[in-house]
Length: 102
Length: 149
Image 1 (spheres, each protein chain N blue to C red):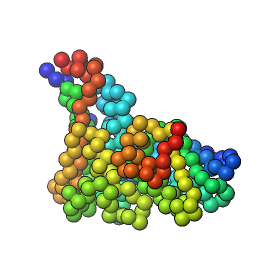
Image 2: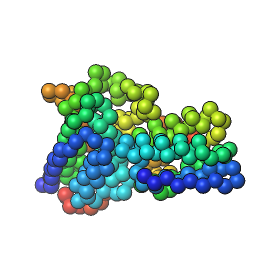
Image 3: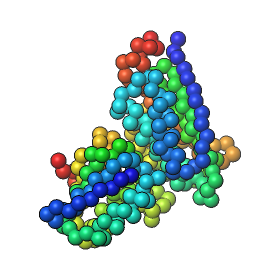
């Protein structure tokens, strides 16, 4: 799992690349939390266009980050999910917490 | 006559083996010429089943997972078996959002995803302890039908 980030006009952009499963979940959690702590921003956009695979473990990771940012009133948005990721998001209602943007 | 094939692998219940399990089954299913979506369905379901073993079956570590895949005609049957602590209430565990580890950011959607991405799933106790998950899926691509006609 590779995680890239940049800030532009108060928005933190995150790009997840690779596979998000149980094996990469811990690294992903820690890295995202470190980025969230270090930077100053008003909203987060997570780009999944380079994510090759994700199972329901990824949902746990994303909801965990949502809960942490909710305490700071910082919204998280999802963009470019694969069709499989999209199906899991819709099944779990993730978009109600982290809306999809185009 | 329908063509059939079978494979079996055993590996440690380690998260690093999840990717191996996914690719292993996906590669085995390739002769059925599945679509990209069908292959994605299978890989996701296998990942969920193997993750369950890694996370829940062996709290003390050092467990093994047996993964088998059988194809007959255009149907794939995948079995993921462990010899771990099992599940007290299998029906409860299959409910969406149910998790025994709510403090670990678990979604509790593993079985729900397997059910959604495969045609059928059966979860039973393994004789001697542990769990057996059997998942089946019909590959609807054109080549599989032609080859086995």
